Length: 462
Image 1 (tube, one colour):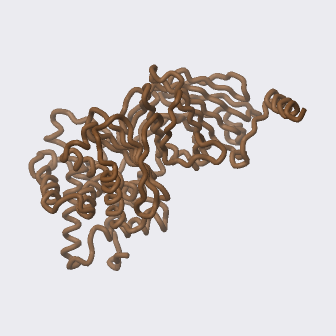
Image 2 (cartoon, rainbow, N blue to C red):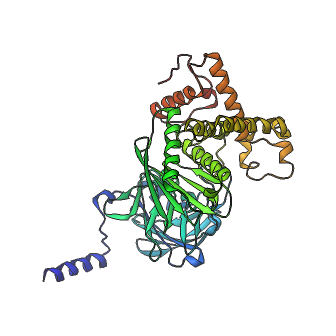
Image 3 (cartoon, rainbow, N blue to C red):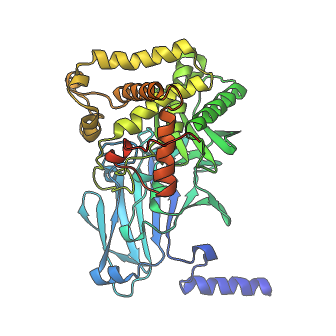
């Protein structure tokens, strides 16, 4: 009798439009549900719901605009993610409504003065396996935030929840976002920026675990690859992480995730706030040179959790996801990190003195032997990344310079100058510590061009 009563009450609530949500979700929030029922089509199904769109400003204007980012932080090129959005449909208060496209990446949905609930469904074509795009096949799904989630500007500061419905018997979901207590496949981001910064790897991949810097780390090993000594692999990761920590001296994360995609291509990576996605050739672990280069990539992307994600040019966050975010300081963001990835390997004793010096010499050889380094300054290379760096042509070698490599060479010179001027008592590490403490910890913001090189003379190591 009690069971029948419970079922009856549930049916009544359902028919009346009541939906149970846990107390922690009872506030206005955005809920996404991701499914992939037919992975062979490379199509991901996305449902987006806003629990309460009855906001005064939206009531006054009579509509809400949903937008798809056109680029992703860390990769400075307009990528037009909206080109992969198809079959977008919308409902207000459970009734179909019109979703009119008003710009290449913006859909406008009418609202009445009493509209409470909004639901949108769309399909994403995902067939480009890179660290900055989406991919789905019968083996895995990789979803990066900017290429996946529509957003509404009035709600970007609110909690965003993502429920993953994996295909068939897929059991593994790797993301830096925490799962909620009531559902292990629902994840919470406190705001949209964090959602964009937290990719999802879904499938049957294995996950390795280790502890470094006093926090848990995970490695999602995606795709087939050459045999690897996992104990040695974990040891090398741990040494890199702990060597990277010595630069700033404080770790800002409570956990960290490496997503490693093994492909037929070469190396690549993209940094995030609590994780990174790396791509490596399947044969990386069977070749000494390739493995050494891979460890350099690990060091580079891991150091980004400080430099770029927290020690950052002021223009790089909060982000404008619809337009280019210009800065003259990508040579600091990437060049300093490129210098430090070699430093970190040496500090971890994963690189010999001879190998370290050869890597430094390679940076200076590039500067000396690339005509474009005498044409394009580092600040101009940073500013023009949006139109030049990712789209080099046959004249690029004569007219452009890499803010990665030339930036690393300049960082080395700055480090040597500081060491020389202070008789070895200070280094570029002290600059990084000062920027981290002053702008990230104390002011929670990025630094300007003027502030970057206006350090107090009393700066001391901690």
